Image (cartoon, rainbow over all chains, first blue to last red; front, side, top):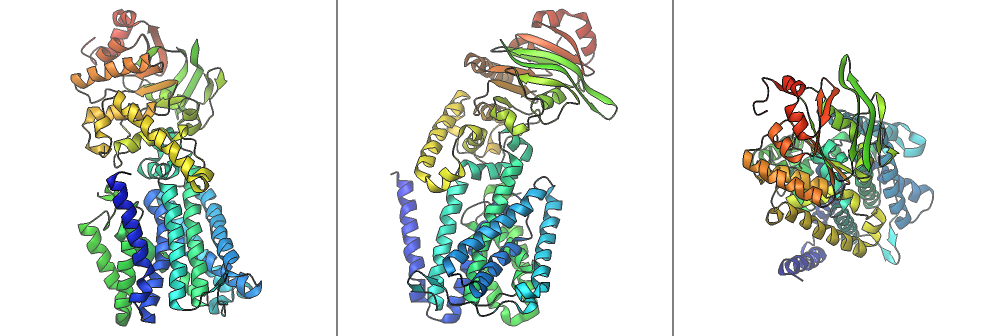
Amino acid sequence: MKSGEKVNVLLHIAGIIGLAVVPLVIENAYYMGIVNLILIYTILCMGLNLILGYTGLLSLGHAAFYGIGGYATAILMTRYGFSFLPSLIISGLLALIFGMLLGIPTRKVRGDYFCLLTIAFGEIFRLVAQAWIPFTGGAMGIVGIPIPKLFAWTIRSETDFYYLGLILVGFTYLSVALLTLSRFGRAFVAIREDELAASVMGINTPAYKILAFSIGSFYAGLAGSYLAVYQTTITPSSFRLDESCLMIIMVIVGGMGSLLAPISGVIIMTLATEAFRSLADYRMLIIGVIMVTVLLFRPQGLFGTAAFKD
Amino acid sequence: MVLLETRQLLKHFGGIMAVNEISLSIGKGEILGMIGPNGSGKSTFVNLLTGIYTPDKGRTLFKNRDITTLPVHRITEIGIARTFQNLRIFQNISVLTNILIGRHSQIKNSLWDVYLRPLSAWKREKAAREKAMEFLELAHLADRANELAKNLPYGEQRLLEICRALASEPELLLLDEPCAGMNPVEMDTLAEFIQRIKAAGTTVFIIEHNMRFIMSVAERIIVLNMGKKFKEGSPLEIQSDSGVQSIYLGEEEDI
């Protein structure tokens, strides 16, 4: 093993230990709640980064896939008696399938139209969730989602949910890393940099765009499933366009197109949202100021790759 | 042996006949040149061969197989690689990654391998990296492997683009005006590089504007004018042809 690799392995071990002891340090349930929120957004933003940062597709519909996962788990667990693990997997796969269904017709449209179509999809999803009352419970949503169990482990406290979130983040991190370090990840970057040149390299660009989009959506489905059991309720208001925008801001502030960079954006934006909660309406103003400041001084985001420098 | 053959390829854009029934064949192992004044249809012709445009009429055969309507990425997979007139390397990524992207179709990892057999996938990745370094060594770029492509000097960026095309191990390499914007020293390096590519067994088809360069590299030259094949012959025959001279008169000083 080279010394660089050794340092890398040590950093990972230190990181895992550090993350494992977080609940011992933070005993306050409110703060643990914020940490759990950070975990949810981390899963969402790692998926979105695959779509936006690696492949260069500006999707404003990520909240819809988050919602598909949330509703899938809520409905399966409350009405059909599914336990948590199968609901989680089905939620992810359902989001993936919807990602594919949206990816297929939009695979050849230009960037700005793609963006508009994803906004439309997100709005359609939210309106259907609001209007299809017998199935989704309308604006009141679905309540009373049971306490999840993973084999013998009952997930009840904030700390339990922290560890569940950590497992999901770990899974997301590993699988996204495997993908981005393969020829698939390179193909995504090639598409972002120059789609025509990418196709001349033997990359089936429409197929790879659908692939990036559906895999990215898969993680949103997982996050939605987690949200459902964590909040025990699911309502359409959690999946509005603002949510999609917030995720995009997180990815951009953290840094697009690199594996861990979006996490920094997630942490800053979640903490800012919580810290300025008392300012109510002015909160969004402060978030805007943070974003503009970061983009002025570090256009590639806090830890982004050089590709977005100018 | 004929490697690639076109039969009456025709492409028009509205009323403009960009490529008008061009038939030609490229023999295995040769260096074929194509020249012609601006707007004579050279680039359109390359775009027809590589599937970026679909011809309105005519057919393209590669190793006796009809490839006229194949999509761009399939044409690369079956063994035709190309470069662009206006340099299209991936600027913001490393030189090595550029080559690895060029090698996309040769790295046989499926999604299944990536997720569920990461060890064997990683072995193939490692082999691909070593192979990519060999291509960089061919162009004397190996020591710049980890630099961003945009930080290379212009001439080296051109060589990188050719290396990236070679990384897919093509049987036919199409170079679209490879020395556009190069200085004479860089041109000599390029000419020598192309000879080495040919020596390694790759057939090369060069579109070029620069007469001096094409005369020194190509073994056979086709002249286009107004979308039509005007003349075909050895560099010497083309050089001394009065018709070719009149096409170029006043445009190219070193005939």
